[in-house]
Image 1 (tube, rainbow, N blue to C red):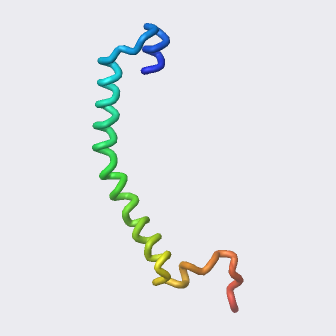
Image 2: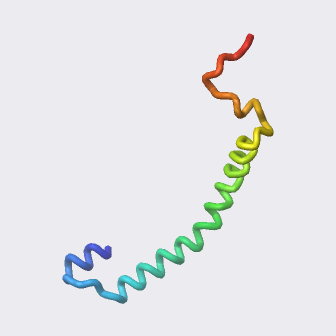
Image 3: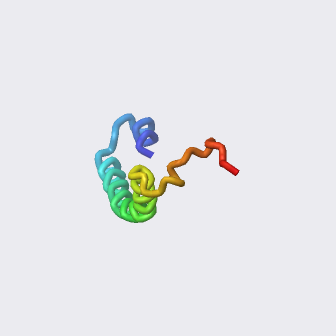
Length: 67
């Protein structure tokens, strides 16, 4: 939309730019907590794996299983 305004008018309308910026900020502010709720359990799982508290998870997939 911003590129269209630039090409169409030859200059950037500051009102359009500010409105778009504020809209993007509001979108990010409302979306980020939900995104954090989704990714937080994954981060905890990764930290548990990195700590080595679950050795069977740390074992590589390609390691041959002993019968």
